[in-house]
Length: 102
Image 1 (cartoon, rainbow, N blue to C red):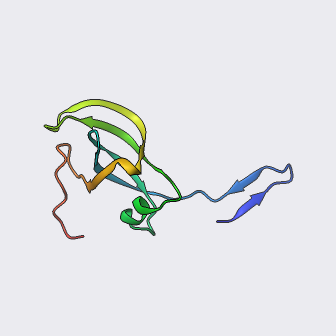
Image 2: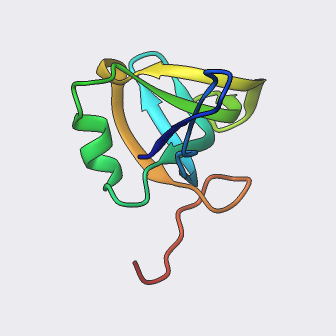
């Protein structure tokens, strides 16, 4: 990452590019569907196992009932990685996985 400083001392750095992945996250207390942000050069598994950060960010979040119905919505949520049981990609409103080639 390159950092630049203008003549007034203002610091500018390169913007970090993240890949958006629509996912379903199962936590200790419930199921969440939303958009995860992933570094395109790192596997999601590696991001989840990275101890440098305790939380992952999600946007356009839907809290789901055990039957899959939307209970609540919020624009942003930070999820503590210690409470995640599993993560899977979601490609449709009903949360079905993409069965195409990976």
